[in-house]
Length: 324
Image 1 (cartoon, rainbow, N blue to C red):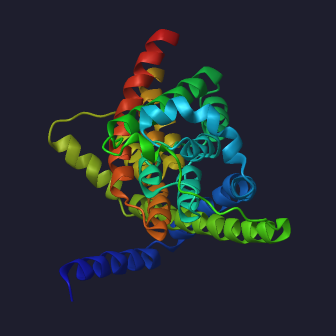
Image 2 (image 1 turned 90 degrees about the vertical axis):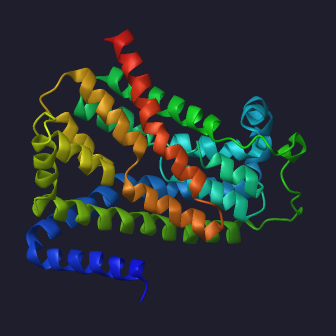
């Protein structure tokens, strides 16, 4: 057996043991994550994916294509590709990646275009940023606007850093598509089935990583990391390490923990911006599964996501200095 397989088995066996050791925390974490998916994500994502698939199949991207020409030259991708970007900025993660993969799988955009677009089509849902973070958490709509602006700008900048300019301009036009008469009933049924599977997959990842976070917290892992940092002479606000590490895995709980810290408002907003633009391991697992199923490389996406949080934090700091 390979060493990597032994390591994986060891990690998941340990996780299973902790599930039995901390049954209450495991149940509460699973319940919280499931209700978060059921009440806040599933209804919106389900309808959003259905409508997007129907619009794509019936040619909405050809109507919008002229509006995307300026950006297409900047990012060296076909104009049609920016429908995935638009979907990602409206629907949030992982909608943009899912739409890009669907467009590539159906032959509407090339592999080069799909790969490039995945570096900047994924941000946290504007609805979550403006309502949950801006209004419910901070009770300040300006905070939501700052976080949304920094998310969009950081994604666009990260995309520019990893754009592939070696492909000639002639590739701007998408691969030729066969002209076929679509049957609305069949298209609608296929859209519902595909969207249901996708939403259930998203929910499964959210619950799994929610359980992982709950177990890590219950086992004292976050406190252990905090103690190590303190022992090497670094002084951090109480609860910061827990909140930050929580956000690395799952952003909703991480943002909540950061909001509760006893630090200045600007620092809270900057750390929140970093977390939501990182996206969390839960979101990355969802996106990687879509990319692998479509046969697309995950490396450009991961590279862009590794720098986007730092860019977003810097933009957030500048906006806070200007607006507060």
